[in-house]
Image (cartoon, helix red, strand yellow):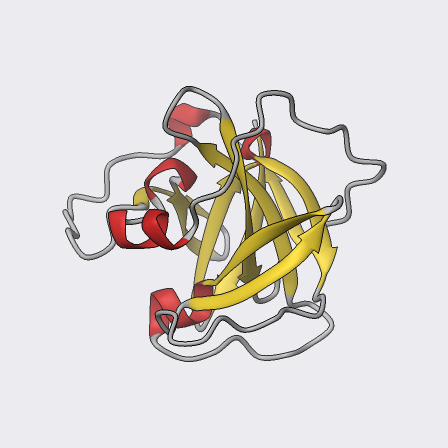
Length: 162
């Protein structure tokens, strides 16, 4: 399996590439008044508005640094009736991929109810990398903010940048 690796602070995280539609450079995002801090706002993706979560804000309580390696990862997350929805994730240092078997990721032994989207861990020469479960990323509060039509057919990206 191929995973996109990104870094938040000193920690590395991985998202299964099958959940990723596209990786974009940091784009202009329109803020949403009175949204939760981790909600960066919305931007237009393939002609439709897409909500964006700042993973640095969600994971560490600080906005993502605006650098060349900061990207918007376009993921699909499950909708209410079996379709998928578009979600942008701002991630720092999102420039690396790794190939690992699903079985390489093992239970961390820690249950974090405040971050249910953080899953199993794998190790490599650089240390731990923790898997992010996109399907568990949005809380009910986020989902209420991001009511949008579901997509039943995912558009084919013209290019994938990592």
